[in-house]
Image 1: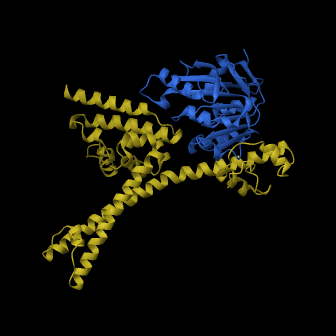
Image 2: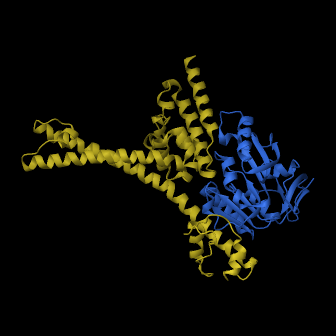
Length: 208
Length: 275
């Protein structure tokens, strides 16, 4: 299993769990500076727990699209280097800011991931893009943000079928999304995240 | 600011100018990314990479805090103002239209304000009446324009609530609660009777029956349900609207599953009524 440096399986509060080292964010259990990272509440956590080759080694530069209230970005910032966290909804950004205040290199950006030109003046080229946006056109978002990814970088994408079309079969939605993705990426791995994350497909890709 | 790819957010910012840095993060743009940390050091904006990241951190924290606070406050507040203005414009137009009708009737004219506005006045008194009728017409037009504005903006402020309740009722609930956050914090029983405060207080003081619905009565799912089942329908609708308001406030995601759950729930209540 290839976990990045700074991510470990630990026994915390009697449970064996993924964990990172950093300031506590909400009510997650902690032990000696390590904090539990619940794969049931984090798609990236689920990808690591499923043993997917994410290419993450620790210390890399990350662009996180769809940061929400910052739960998963907080774990990323714990083990990665500079982490740019983009979220468009104002309410979750309030929580994201609180998470970022406790960390040195987590940069919150209230921006629309569909409009990269509005943050390209702030975000440097990155080693990894983590994308978890709940809007239509998730593949298009990944393609538009490809410009931020270094040549040998990785896209770690969670596609939410219901955000694209609630009436279509998830598998059909995933087929369409991955086909579109291939316009700019080479797909290295794909895996359903059920049952932890219902109707979600995890994709690892690199720019072509 | 600039579309020049070589211009980072720090380009025109003095290293000590926190407000300028905030504005640059918020309003700036570029065609694509670049090695901003390296360029910032080269441009003497920062002493080294660490220094750059501390400055970036301060600027992004400040920008995200200010922008999210402003947008949160702005959106539901603006929606409330437009809805109340729409109500005021309509109520005032009705009131003045009644005055016009009464006055026009005394002259033997048609009483409809629109018709009065088109007449050729003779005496000074008639001139005032026609002028008043034209005010009524433009107030009605403004009320309609405000309604269109509310219908367009409510879905961006509260997407789920607007989908379930319709944009006008959604805006009305936000307005009655005093904001989206206030609405999201209310239990569903309170949302159910929002707008029926008079009836609720009469009930609490004893005697009167408890109100089954407030403004949600205007929703087809309450009004169009058989009176015997209307209380259940109002309760079910209020429950889903409460969840919708919470999703809108706390996450902002659109969850189309809510619509379907509400449809099914009302369907069950109505079929039960038929049986």
